[in-house]
Image (cartoon, rainbow, N blue to C red; front, side):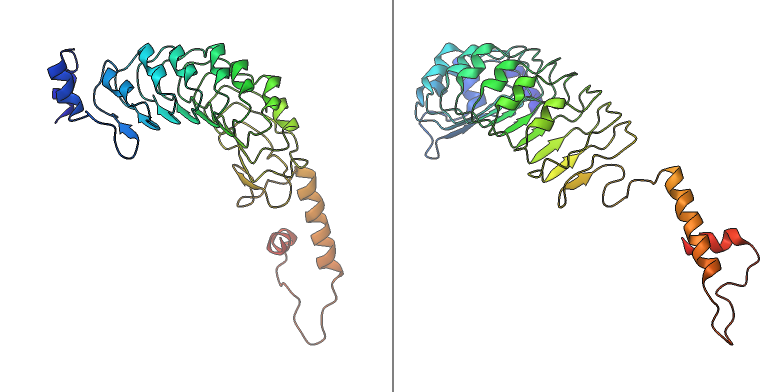
Length: 290
């Protein structure tokens, strides 16, 4: 069925039209998963709320902007995908799903998150990239088991100091935000494995050498003049990383040039052998030595 036909049928709320969109969704799936992604849905099918043993529910890439209160019946739900929809706010009924572990909210129109999101005490992965958040709500910092946080592509300028309370957090992804400095709170989070601040406005990176637990730092596409110094074994992705060493300062280049020249002039020439270089231009000798 083409998307155009689905889009037209989705405007009509009759049971016949909804059944045409959903197909034979009458019984609880054996794998306890319902995938209604890319169905052009404009309203949530209530019949799904009858599958109280459901564990995974995918509603990605639809036209949803609200959810019914009956969703609260799905208390066994662990994965909920609401990305690529038209949500302007997170429906409060989502915060009643106490077993939820993974929540996808990316690519919506969300400007804030309710305080009630802190009720999701089992949540360990939160994707809320590509929304309209101008700050990271402190309520997110009250999710004790959160391990992965994706908040990139939001106009966020600052990260709250309360983030350090997330002692289980291992990776934070902030690519494409509006950070103008490396968030100071991250320097206190020695338990982090991955930090992604790609495509921001950071001009200077502090040393991260003390963060010995780090495995990956992504800092590319920032107007910085230095690479973050990291502990041995930490991979850096960006300008002057291991694959492209950080350029030396002018005085370091001049000192190395002078040292190389002195070594060349003081080196004795072996008997009956021509000099190491026959050029009369000392600059050519220097550049060859370097």
